[in-house]
Length: 242
Image (cartoon, rainbow, N blue to C red; front, side, top):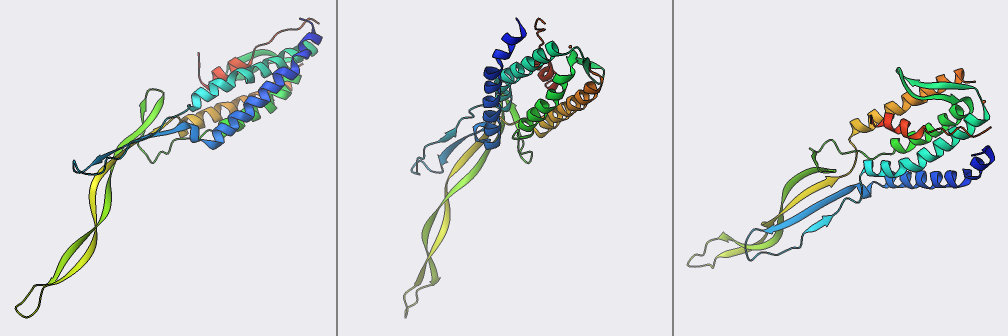
């Protein structure tokens, strides 16, 4: 592939990247797609009210959304790396704590990589996290809290004898409204959110990448296109994938 052929793909790759990035930020900021619950009602007596259960499914999880977002982000990073390596011979390895994430990255790409990593960090920073005041247990791809039981009460009027009847006077009775338990709600909460620890670790590793990119940029020194794949390696590092 010639350099001018590579440039033709820029608008497509950049447009898809921008669309998915904004969509992911919107999904993470809302957070409602990651929450679910099931709620069932049991009457205290056989004659009690029969209420239908309530349920809300978890639409997706943080990790599933990150996987969906990763491909166009990688495509954008790989495009920029390939374009810039073709333009320059000034290169440097991206080294984090002795781990070489990518070799011989052009200085112009390292400049843009700092911006891209800040953008990536923004949607990782927007990740909704589990309420750690609750006791969550893993269940498949989700986290589960509960079940928890809560009584259902209704108001009932009861007669109370204030004064017993005598030969001279009838009994004095007063109506009192009382809360009477008639059943039980059993609620189980589900979530596809990340734990605060996971989020903190991901952000910490992205911060290390940003710092390493700045350091590599200072070292870096350029016409058949030299194809570079770097995006996947970055996300493999963030998620500790071998």
